[in-house]
Image 1 (spheres, one colour):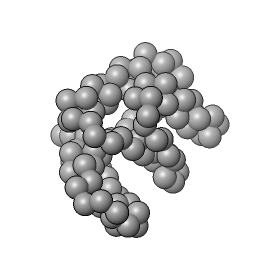
Image 2: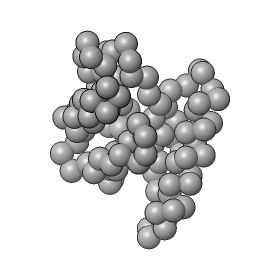
Image 3: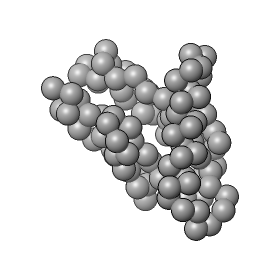
Length: 105
């Protein structure tokens, strides 16, 4: 079922992510990959690798579609609720914009 597909996608994200990344399931089928001190170029490469591996996985290719919000937190000690709100608002922007599948904020 759906949970099996979500677990499969989570494994793929973990395998493709940078070794010190923190991966969290936010809710439903939404995940966060938390990275510290990485340039946009490296993050774009990570995103491209996840897209590539997802498209090559026969279990996921026809089922999973995803958007990615890349959030560079500039203020240390920002409350997690504020971070979550900013990411959620950005996800809503992506859902309304069929031209883009990732967004840097």
